[in-house]
Each structure stands twice: as C-alpha cells, then as structure tokens.
Length: 264
Image 1 (tube, rainbow, N blue to C red):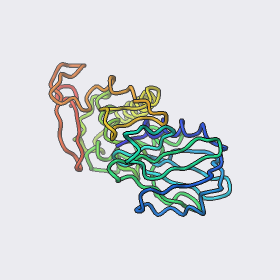
Image 2 (image 1 turned 45 degrees about the vertical axis):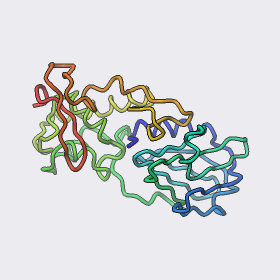
Image 3 (image 1 turned 90 degrees about the vertical axis):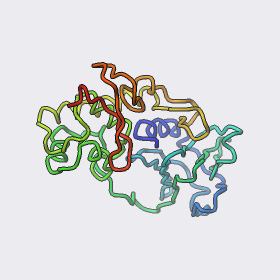
C-alpha cells in the first residue's frame, strides 16, 4: 500500500496541473459514485496530502478525495497496460489528463462539498509532531509499539514499511509495549520517523516490483528507496548492522520485519 512518501510524491507531481480547469470527467468504473456535474467545469486550485489521502481542491468549492489503497495511483501518464485498469479520467483544458489507475479496485474516490470527512492523527512531518507528542501517544498505550505507530487516528500516513525501518534505526523491538519506551527512546524514535520519511520522499518512494499494480509516481517513474531498506521485505537476509538474520512476524494482520539480534 502506498504510504506517506509515495502519496506525497504523487501529490507533488499532480500540483503541476494546479490552475487547470476540468473540462470533462469520464467515470469508467460505475462503483465510483462521482457527480460529474459537480466536478466538470471546476478549476483545480491545489492538490494536497492528508495522511494517505490525496485531496484535489477545486477553486469553486468542494474537493475530490482519493485513497489509493493497495495498488491505486493517480497519474498524468497512462501506459497501454494500465488503460484497462483506469477507473476515471479527468480531462483538463491544458490537454493533460489525470488518470485513476486502480488494478485491484480497492482504491476509493469521492466528491466532498465541505471539509475533510475523516478523523486522522497528527502529520508526522508537521510541526505538531514533536517528541513530546509522540511520548504522549505511546505513554498511554500498552499496545505493541509497531501497530500503534500505524494507527492512522494517532499518526497519519505512517505505514508498514517506514514504521519497521524507523524502529530498526533506533534498535527498538516492534513487539515492545508502547508505554515501556523511555523518554530517550521516544526522542530517538521521533527523529528516526521523520528522517526515514524525508529520505523516502527524496527518493520518490519505494517500489517493490514492475507490474501494473506496483507503485509509480504521477509521471510513471518508479521509486528508488527500496535499495535503502534495512529490514522491510528482507526476511532471511543478514541485518546490515549486526549480521543476525532478519525475521518476519505478523502484527495486527500486517507483516513486520525486524532484527532479533539488535532490536531488543
């Protein structure tokens, strides 16, 4: 599933068409209940990210909110292989198009007239996400720290990949109860979360394969952060820090990768 760095990368690409007017909306998947009449004729004011959501703000009011889920993406370029997986197309007055490519049909799109309808936690790259805020979140929970970091009502946008990587960087076992972390550990974890997210954005996110379902940015380019992953997706390989074998476990229904040698 695209996480904060992947969604942020797509959003930055889409902002290149801010100011363009949407001339026509083609809805190719009837399971998407999009009011064409409320979208066509509107101007794209700006595109922003909220958690893992993409919000296309329309200058005359309302917004189009898209969640990519497992394999979706918004793109300015659509390959022949992606055409049959395209669920809607926004035709712009500058001869460009925005394609919602959604192979597994798990992604969602909706028009909202006012506000943002979902309750999400603090943005981890915002000024509100301080070490003190993170300490407040973990101190009140006996849940394992990894699932807590992925709780979107606590921290918006942080997912499986980057929470695993941040915990590895600070040598914290993902199974530890959150409220057992010391103030020093929380401070280091806070810095690791922000640094791994920023580094991943700089590398345009993480791509694991080259199928139609794998992540690409708005221009069809693959992410480059996968070569920098220390533990995620590397079960059975040696830890780059201590040489112990990386293991995979399941937490809250999701894969967690960590090193039992140095994450204690």
